[in-house]
Image 1 (spheres, helix red, strand yellow):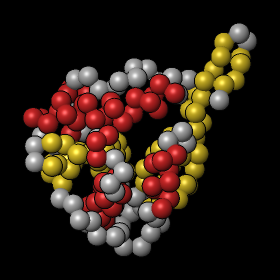
Image 2 (cartoon, one colour):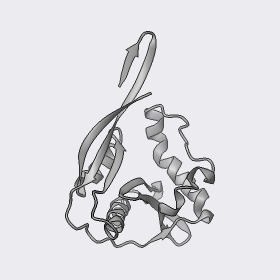
Image 3 (spheres, one colour):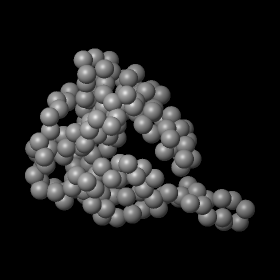
Length: 163
């Protein structure tokens, strides 16, 4: 969606804030490990692979956002990895009561790992608080919106991000 102001095109997109309204989260069948620096290169590749198309479609530069481990230095203690041996399958960040950056490597998509990561994050947050669990997702990412709504999340608000 674009709006023309004078001769400048203002681009914007919608972000949903969603809240978990489900009862007790469904138990997961996965085990997660805390982020470790030795997995950063895999994490960076998967992160950029997961968000590249959206960032390009919404013209959010740089399209490949992660390029240095220092970008996540203050966040990495809250990032958890799903592994297959020494291979990162996916990841999710749990920041207080917010779920963020849920990603699954392309090779592993379509096997239910996204749902398992979401359930794990919800269960993990519920271990230490009964406060509302939230996440934010771009309206553009309908696959993620569908995953979240099918697993107990509802849209609480919409925000138009203008750039």
